[in-house]
Length: 113
Length: 112
Image 1: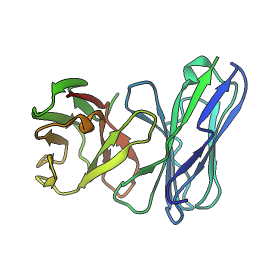
Image 2 (image 1 turned 45 degrees about the horizontal axis):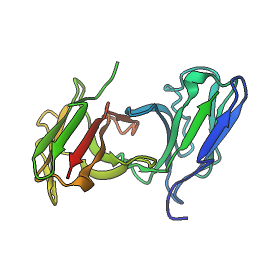
Image 3 (image 1 turned 90 degrees about the vertical axis):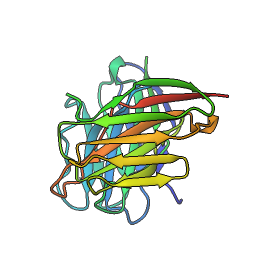
Image 4 (image 1 turned 45 degrees about the vertical axis):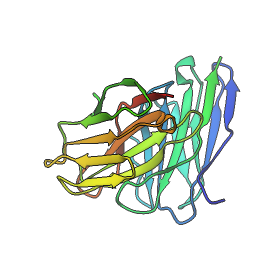
């Protein structure tokens, strides 16, 4: 596809369950970001991948959160033992260059009951 | 601690009015971007500014990067209902690190 694709678009889960969110970036984009957005608020940085460099995990809120990326393609964000405060939209973005131009997917709306 | 503070947080205006949104920081940025986000969608890039003092115009939108590269503004002339959305500034810190930090957001509503 032409844009960043995220799946699922919506995920409802029970507290304590694990969830996995997927992001397919634009082909050829070396940088990939995950952000969290609570209702009506700005974006909270979670993690950043750039090529084969070690990812910047400084934004992950706890050790229940982890993310992986295969080369310069698909990324997965995993949240273990979900809590109600994890409910938010999780946005993925990719970027082709070093001037911070990000292209976003439509996000995954996560609801933890 | 939020690196980029936006003001106002909310803005509701009548169609045809002008408005300005501010994005401020105590830190220097090598580049700064403005995005607009509509409900259910990811943010969409409007503009990137990289030079202190730079002014860019995109139809009715005017973007300015502060001389010290610590702040920016977005001015909309004769706002239209289609301008409604969440406006986000975002910045990249110097050093080629490319970690992009987003501002707190300004929710704009333009009433027909």
